[in-house]
Amino acid sequence: MERRTLGRTGIPVPRLCFGTLPLGPLQTGLPPEEGGALIAYAMDRGVDFVDTAELYGTYAHIREAARIAGRYPTVCTKSYAYDRAGARASLEKARRELGLDTIDLFLLHEQETPLTLLGHRQAYEFLLESKAKGLVRAVGFSTHAASPVFAAVQAAAAGRGAEDPYDRDFWEDLGHGPYEEVDVIHPILNRAGLGLIDGPAERMLQAASDAHGAGIGVLGMKLFGGGNLLGTLEEEAAFGRSLPYVDAFAVGMQTRAEVEVDLALFEERPIPAEAAFEARARRKRLFVHDWCTGCGACVTRCTRGAMSLGPDGKAFVDAAACVLCGYCAAACRDFAIKVV
Image (cartoon, rainbow, N blue to C red):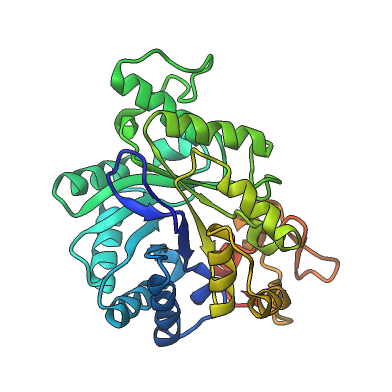
C-alpha cells in the first residue's frame, strides 16, 4: 500500500483510509466487537488509518480494533462543536472513548461556507490551543463544498505574507482569524461531483489542488459517491489514484469482501472474483420505515436536496442525489431512517 505524508503534518498515512461510518448506528449498527475485528483485519493488511466522527458512534469499534491489533491506527475524527465548551467536551469524549491521550486529526465537521467556518471560530481556536498542548496533532475541517477550501488557501497565503491567490475575498471582509493555520481538509472528491453543493467536480478538484500547493493535507471522501458509482468502480479508483494532490481517500467498508476489493483497487491489482461478487451484491440504499411521521427534519438536514416529503406525507429519497451519508438518520427523532 502506497503511503504519503499528510500535507505538512508529518503524519504518514496509507492512501486508503478506513471510513467507519458504515459500521455505526447510522448504518449497519455492528457491535464494537464485530466492527473492531474488521478494522483490525484491515490494519493487518496495511490500512492503519481510520476516519470517524462523534456523530458516527464508532469510537468503541476503533478502541476494540486497537486491542485486537495490539496498536492504534492513525485516527481522524470530527465534531460539530461551534464554541469552546462544545469543542472541549467533544475532544475529551474522543480521548476518553478511544483511550488515547492525543488525537491525530481533529476536524470541524461539515463546514459548508467560509461564514460557517467563522461561526465555528471559538471551537477552532480551542482545537489550535489543544494542538499546542499536544492533545491534538493536526486540525482542519471536512466539507461538501469548494468555497471553504478556497477560503483556507486564501487564509494560508495571508498567514505567510504571500500574494492573495484569488480575485475575490472568500471571507467577505470579515477576517479569517485563526484559519491561517489549517493542517488538513476532508472534502468530497469524485469524478462525477456527487454530493457537492456549490459547483461541479472540477471546482472542488481545483480547490483541493490549491490546498495541496499551500501545504494543506488532503483526505478525500465519497470517491465512489456513497455507493452510487459502483458500476464504474475500477474507473473511479483509477481517477482517485491519479490525483497527485490527494494524500488519501476515506472509503467506507463494512465487510471483509469490501476491504479486499478496496485494497486491490488501491494497490492496482486484480480484484479477487469472490470478493468482487459479494461486494457488488450488497448495494446499499436509504430505507424509510412506515412509521415516519413526515416531520421534515431529514429534508432540512440533507444538504444535497435528496430528501423531500412524498404525496403520502412521509420522507422520500431521491436515490440519484443521495450519497448515503446517513446524516438524515441522525436528524430523525423517530429513528425511521436507516442506510441498509
